[in-house]
Length: 127
Image 1 (cartoon, rainbow, N blue to C red):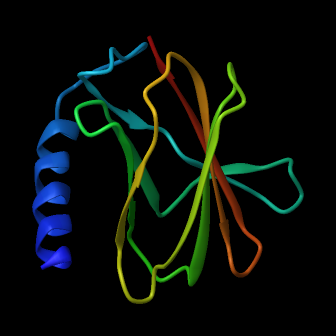
Image 2: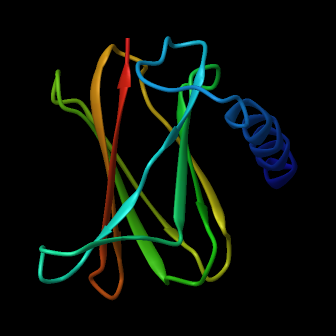
């Protein structure tokens, strides 16, 4: 039953994320979060196989993984208040994850760390 509810929420969330929005996001809106892979040398950044979207209506960060990256640790931090949310999921068994957060206004940083040590990051703003 829980899987069915999560599937419905993810389907609704993907519809909201299709809206073309840029810049600051009011809490009722959605925003694609550009995620970049930080090379182990910390000098080279490249596009990656993780996509993320903030859903204001759900007050959550949705993560979609296009390949098996193993276990992924997610941290979302409101840089303005210091609030932080963490979770872990195994991308070999599920390719999508929804992490509820508070929609307090501020600049947010999203970081993903894979079991192999790769680091991915992105930022977004909530008004």
